[in-house]
Length: 287
Image 1 (cartoon, rainbow, N blue to C red):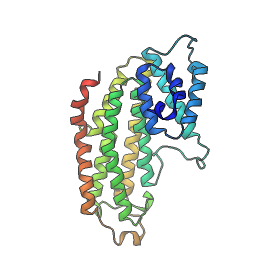
Image 2: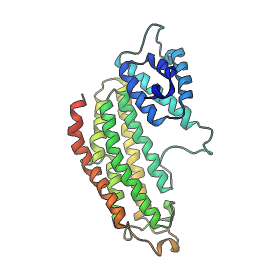
Image 3: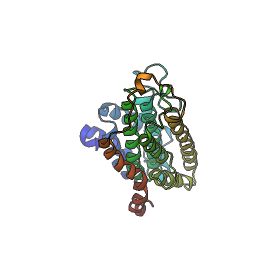
Image 4: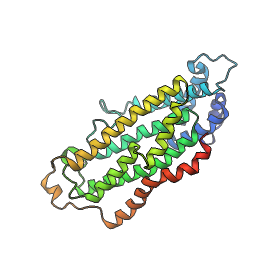
């Protein structure tokens, strides 16, 4: 927990949170935001001073469900905005989405942001178990996508630009099958792993019967549509489009080696079945 690492000052800053939020955000920040403890302390001090700017009195704590949701939204949005989106080290107009990226690794890497978004707004709806369920499913199909992308890059003599690929289906059929499977799971295709957790998150948002629930539901639907777009765009530009590769990159092209297939196979199995079996394991904790 971050309070353990950063000292009692962070623990003091957490005092205005409901008890069930302390452990969740402590675990998240400990794993995701190590190294910015000082900034977080200052941030929480400013939050305490302003009472989150939602009209809390000096003697009121956000201890009901609605205020917990507002707290989680504002906390996550402001920290991410401060330390990522407006980071001065970003070059030019760089942005964290995959819609127009042409680097194979960047498309997959930035698609992680949308899946982290699903996890965060599940936490915002107080569905922590569903968030961790999606985290587990996401581990399988995203690892499958990254390793398969590595196979493509290796086969193409370290070329990562999708505009210099195309027509690789006949040369890399196994890798194509793995990327397609990972993309389908990422999109939430029914009965693959991503479907069970993403559907559960959207379902809880849809039945929340509050403005926050409806808002997050439609954001989740929009994110799912964007995910589908850039996943198919990746497959089309890499495998199905006309070949735009340099001759020296395709002269010695080869599919994944057997030792790599040994690593891809369990990830593929997890991308198919982890949601099905995990849903039964987690369902008793969903309510």
